[in-house]
Length: 97
Image (cartoon, rainbow, N blue to C red; front, side, top):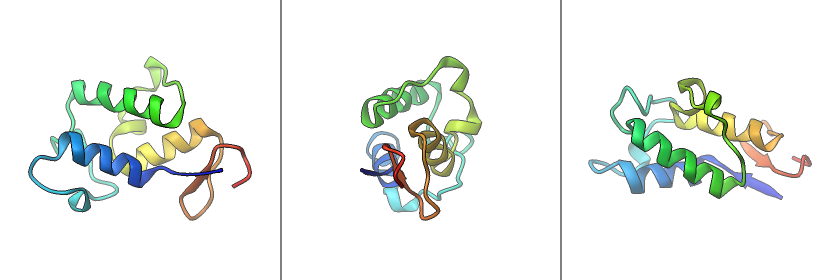
């Protein structure tokens, strides 16, 4: 089973936080916090979404910018939580990437 992370997260961020522009305007490595896209309350909403959407648990000590401050960082973090990652950015939850 393959899970494509970034488009799902990008759409969530666009639907919930981007009021000025669409999802395509958000760069993969753009800081969501420094760019004013997401604030501390938004991070909590994002975490709830990630936990529900990808069936993962995110601990309090994982709520750091290195994990959640850009689409690329979120993709990498969720991929680690799921356990696998393939070079093309497609992630497999069952370990058979």
